[in-house]
Image (cartoon, rainbow, N blue to C red):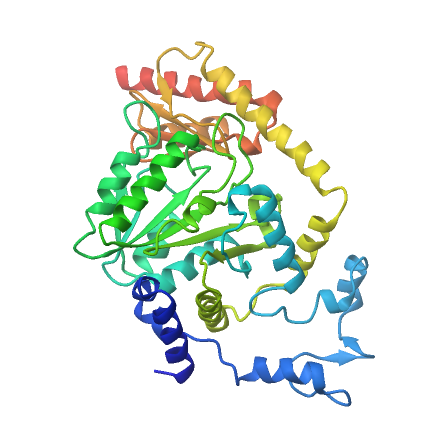
Length: 435
């Protein structure tokens, strides 16, 4: 094992042996080279005043070489903020501004120990870093039965972990914290579990309320008290889009100092929050009261980034930083929030109106981009196909009964027509099957 990796491991084991035990084999072996090209280039950048012949970029007239056909479309920005490589952990100014934003939007983080957010190539990359650092073959990764399909690819296919699902809702239509607790406690023999908490949920658009949030925290605490080391990951992709009486903060704040056997990890980003999906700017943040432990986790995360994408795109980090620092940012974001809230409220109004009879129920939703219909007698894939082929309407079929509708991409005034078409398609299929 490389000496740098060994040093990081020794630090982690000294600071929190439970967190060290959570590391995968890859997580234990990974490190960020301190004597490689990047570190030598960084040293040269501060000391090489005459010539700096280190890193592989081209310079011209004292700034990064570039093509006018590109720069002309980006003239509001300096070439140094676009063309140079971003640091592996991300643009320092952006990391600071995002951390400040986290504290402002999550008051429960006040006084808690957590690291500087590390820039990722959006949410999927952040989750894959979690998988690489902590998931080994047959490790249990726990998340609800209503989930984003990429979890299976990221943790199951890529890392060979065992996927453990539990029902998202209980009989009262609330988050099923009892089932989460059972799924965690079932891992006592393994002594380790990775728990993914995605709120607002994709695909249902559900966020727990404060009481449900406390039940989730207690379920994780119960697992830790039982001797299970838990990597608790908050997938906050749709953070901030809370339209009703639900949690308005990430559970990361409550998890941050919950138990020595719990490592809280927050994965979030500008992708959905700031409506910049194609920019691919996300963040991963670790919680701990130990600065040496946080530093070791950052070094290992940088090692994973260096070994996979080297660093994230610099231009999009610059764009996001510029937006976050703008005096118009909050106002413009609030305007978009109100549009999204109006769409969600309109969907709920339509579904509660009684105009669609009893052909479907819908899963509780109060946030995010999506909602899910639960079809009573129609196959979801058959309905999806008919909607697409006969009416030119796209939806997502999930299993036999669930149809996901992204109201986020439908104008409020068009939602009536959308659900009328879905309803008509159900009736069409019912006629076909009754013949």
